[in-house]
Structures are given as structure tokens and as C-alpha cells.
Amino acid sequence: MSGRLALGVLLAGAGTLWLLAALDVLELGFRTWIGIVLIGIGCAIVLTPGRHRLLVVAGVVLVLVGLPAVLLEENVFEGGIGESVETPRSSADLEPFRHGIGKLTVDLTDEGLPLDGASIEASLGIGELVVLVPSSTDVTLDAHVGAGNLEALGETKNGIDVSLERISGTAGTQELTLELDLGIGNARVEIR
Image (cartoon, rainbow, N blue to C red; front, side, top):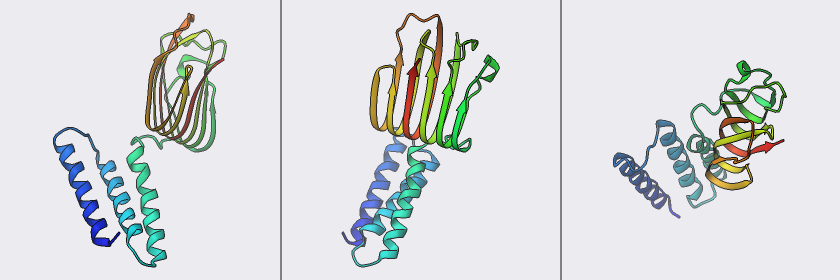
């Protein structure tokens, strides 16, 4: 593909997205536009014919830098890096759980933890998000994964922009609402 053709495709794609956003068909934020532009420029560089290894590497880097801006929520990188295990012991400990990159486990199985009527938020940028829920609890789930896998309440979904809204349907003694958000990776809700 020639550089001119790649630039033409990039401009036509950006124009189409701008038109859809102007007609309120799509809602694109500033970060998303930056990600789209970086991905487009990276693809145009990579697709330019010739032996330009350094340019190809630069194009691939631009694509990789642009992907998180398109796929992830703005606040998804709050928190640390590595493995984090959160084990709340009281209702005061049920604040939003946020982690940047790695594995976040939220263990809600403590016997003395009052979950009835609680709403729990957990978010992770990149990695694995695991939430452990006691078997005596009914769960209302609202989960979103930008790219990856989602396994919860007997259902498995994978791909890009995966969402699952579901109620567990058990005859539990407590009712809990889970709001989960994962940028890239695997999310899992386990009933124990």
C-alpha cells in the first residue's frame, strides 16, 4: 500500500468518525480521538512500502500506545502495579477497589462482612480481576471488559467491548451489587 493511499484511508476514516460523532451516533472523548490518531498514523507508517525498519518499529509503537486510549476508561489506571488482594472486614472497607496493572482479587467471603444492600465497585487497567462472593449472596452484576474475557454467574464472554448485566438468581440471605470494569485482560466472579 502506498503512503498516499494509507494517508487517504486514514483521513477518510477520521472524517467518518467525526461525522458520526457530530450526528451523535458515536460519543468519542478527547482520549479516544488521540488513540485513534496514533493508531492511524502507526498503521500508515507500517503500511508504507520499502525497507524502513526503524519506521516500522516506530509505527508499531504508535499503535501500541494508541490502543489503551481507545479501549480503556479514563480512570482505569488508578491504583498500583503488581498483585493486590483486598479482604474487607467491615462495611467501611467496601470503598471502590482500583488497581492499575497486574492482578486484583477482591475477597468478600469474610463471615462477619455485611453485604446486604452493598454496592461494590472494582476496576483494573490491565491484568486479571477476580471477585470472590459468598454462596449465601444474591448478586446483581454490571461488568465491562474493554478487551479480553469475562466469566461470571455461569456465563462466559470474550472479545472486544464485552459487557454482562445479570442477576445470580439464588435464594441468598444477602443482596449485593457488583460493578466491575476491566480494560484489558480476564475478569472472573466466583461464588464460594
